Image 1 (cartoon, one colour):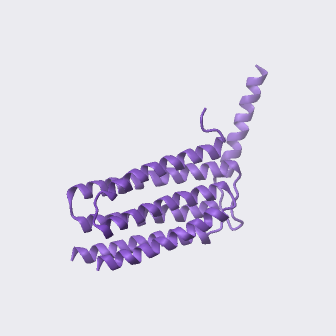
Image 2 (tube, rainbow over the protein chains, first blue to last red):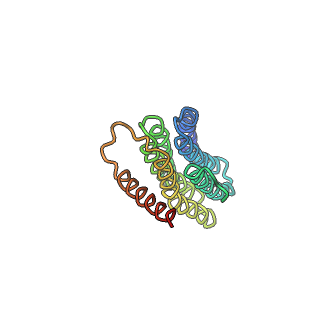
Image 3 (tube, rainbow over the protein chains, first blue to last red):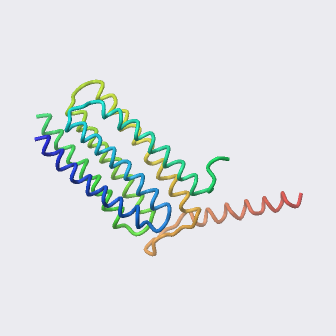
Length: 89
Length: 124
């Protein structure tokens, strides 16, 4: 039951990842690409969580937590770069 | 029983992640795309991590998952606000269908006051 739900969920997340990649390539401005990369990172977090359910391995949840923190830092640095075009002051 | 509940919550979460991807493709400008991406992915990750909690039913997994949910709910609005502010300051790029632009007049006023301040400083 749950394995079938995980399969369907992985399919949905894969489709969402493909749509994010299209926006990442097309994106007219840099801000569009940053938003697409942020959404991509969150989708990958979802894939890792679903893989934790599928394999029954609990340790992947810690990876979700760590990757969430890293993607937030990356997005903040990119926002700063967009605004000032200078990260290290 | 809790397995069915976990499957249902998981499918709801994955559906919201798919909605985020669709919004990223379909919406007209960067601000509305961000609106779709941020809110829908936050809710979707909440659903998926709730499914993780219901599936494992162990205290340490629940602790990590709740920490991850809390962190996502805390950081997603902050990141979206920072990107939208930077994008607007680089050049609005609003869609033609935009009806209300509240930050534009505010930013113009702020820029004119900082300009006069710079003038005063340069005279001194």
